[in-house]
Length: 147
Image 1 (spheres, rainbow, N blue to C red):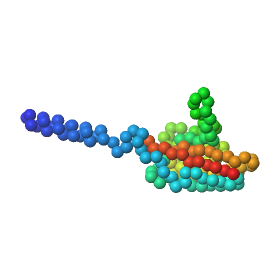
Image 2 (cartoon, one colour):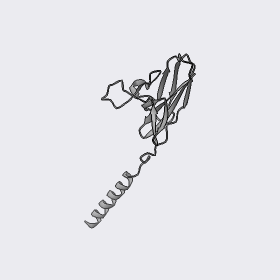
Image 3 (tube, helix red, strand yellow):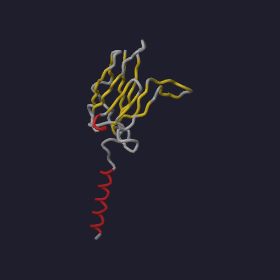
Image 4 (cartoon, rainbow, N blue to C red):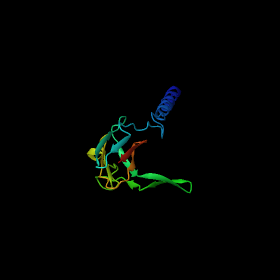
């Protein structure tokens, strides 16, 4: 009986030690790698597709047009949150509308592609924006620059 208890305790200890190991510790996932970290558009606008190379799917977090320091804190300029084609109850954020730039992850967020569309720039000022993307505990940024 003592041998059975010892073997059971040893098996439980082995299972606990294995279950505590992580392939990716919290915050330790590899950053998202993309085929185009920056996309350029002429003043006429257009469409570009960016692909995640090391993750099979991702979602949009938010977009912004710049950052400024204010009282020791960074603040995003013209920040816009992502939305979902399935409404607010969904957990996949696959749409982003930044006014002059738009982004979508096809198939309701079940894709490793990001389609970025930029409207015509009718001003003489170049513009830029940043799109934050996420896959689990991995993060990335895609930059948009338009003449």
